[in-house]
Image 1: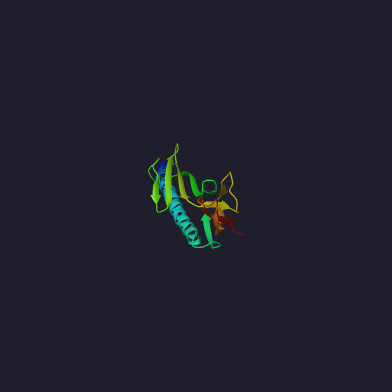
Image 2: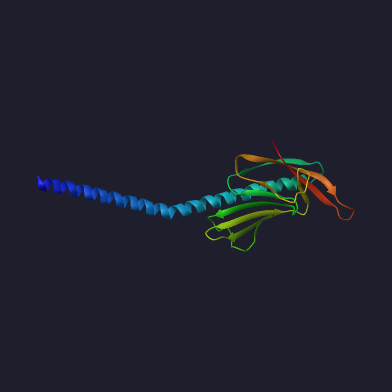
Length: 183
């Protein structure tokens, strides 16, 4: 009887030890894979945003053909912030606290007309994608001191891009491209 209790106790001890080893291995695998999963997710978000901004840029180029030319574009935004900077005539996308170093920190990388820069933070990276235009870019017909910002939402943003013609003095004329948000 004493021997039977001893064996039964040994089985339970072994079961507990194997369970703890299994849990430790699962924890180890998760600790190794979680950063890679986050890195993959961030790289995917950045590449999708590059594609979206290239579509946005192509719509800007399309409206250049003639005044009153207008195009609609939708932009989905899962992470990061989009800025329409009317004072600097640019469109920016900023992803703070990224787990991926998309480009060499401190070095600008051009992908077509899109500029990519990576800034090293303490434990992550800040990724900035930017489109700069030689046209007067406005939002709702106005230049604003503060850039208009768009945060992540579940429904894609809808924008209208319109060529409003030439503005400025003779000899200093520039195309006026107005961006408005759809309903």
